[in-house]
Amino acid sequence: MTDATRYPLLASPHVHLSGPVDQAMYHSFRDQIAAAPADGTLVIAISTLGGDPEVARLMGDEVRLIREYQGRELLFLGKVAIYSAGATFMAAFPADKRFLTRGSRIMVHERLLTSDIHLSGPLKTLTATLKAKLHEIEHSIRIEEEGFRDLVAGSKIDFEEVRRRAPENWYIEAEEARDLGLVLDVI
Image (cartoon, rainbow, N blue to C red; front, side):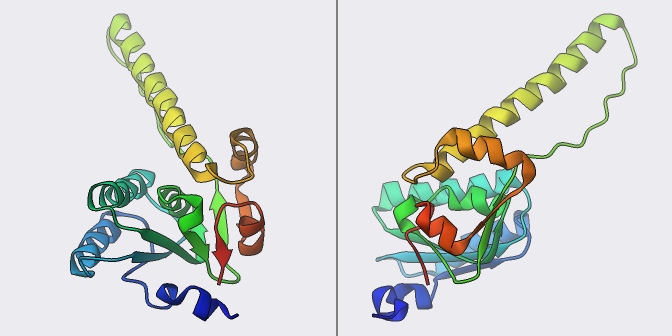
């Protein structure tokens, strides 16, 4: 049996996303969701080298709301590159609703932060400035770990494994992702 007959819906995704995960992608996502059929399974395809993880989380929350409030099945189809924020978006779909095309790769890494801290002023305000930056970092780590847990839920990978491998930019080939249970199948 060919993949085409096993998964016919995947041949014609309702939503096509490619490029950086940013506000433009979010607006395209919303427009395409609005134009999709009102009933039945929705297929969302993405190819991205990454981008804004908070936009990925926002799109993922939209997926969750559609699934929970409309009772619709949503399928994820990763094509070619599902890097960084793309993997964050993929985590919004249950593992058994995820698919990759042959030759695709997922890349998981830690969130990145570039920031300068300029200290100037009364000493007591400097402490608050430093604490605020530390709280930002700690909260970002918690969000990152929530995403890692969502990504590996229902797979053969435990949270500690993804947390251990993420600092070195973990690339996962499509067949390996299937064998690890990150996706249902490769088409």
